[in-house]
Length: 254
Image (tube, rainbow, N blue to C red; front, top):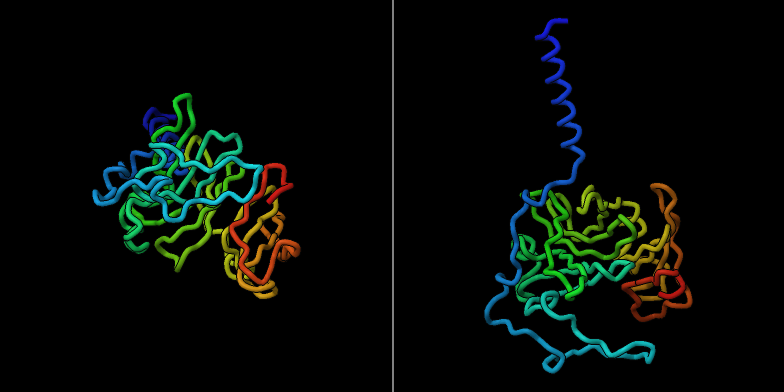
């Protein structure tokens, strides 16, 4: 075999290896905009504290301490919502937008509204960083709903879809990648709303037919790529609204 042919084969092998590895590796953060969320908060918005909150949280059980706000840098004068804590209590995901007066269709384009993550350390919580759940250059408005192991469930408004749609993502090498639509079975037939995953069970609220009225809580079980017919959670639901499910780590409380 001549040296030229060997060189061509070597170049071809290197090219194929680059393509395969490049297509499967997580996207680099440098491909996304650098976001400093606090500089995007309007100057006319003041930080709200418990003393100035018109709708403070109410405690209805003596099993818990009085609620208190998380300190800076998690909380700011902007709006934080939809917190999701890791099982070890060391990582917190939440939705942030700098100005709630801005309608969602404009938040979609501002490159700052979306999911953020902060990590607990000896000094408190780290500066929150943006979690990108869409390809660079494309727009989306995402909010994490639950995380189980290396799987994230999040709702999103994005290009190519109508309305708010449910997606999953996979945690690989410190980044959330491989996001994909959960499918028409869950979204259109089962009609899931806010969700929480525990094991192979997906708890969700929905106003689908067969409930007791308004939003009710349901559960469906995963078997491979399919889901069972949903079952209403009878003792919990009433003619009023029940929603936003969350299950304890041992599965015994919800």
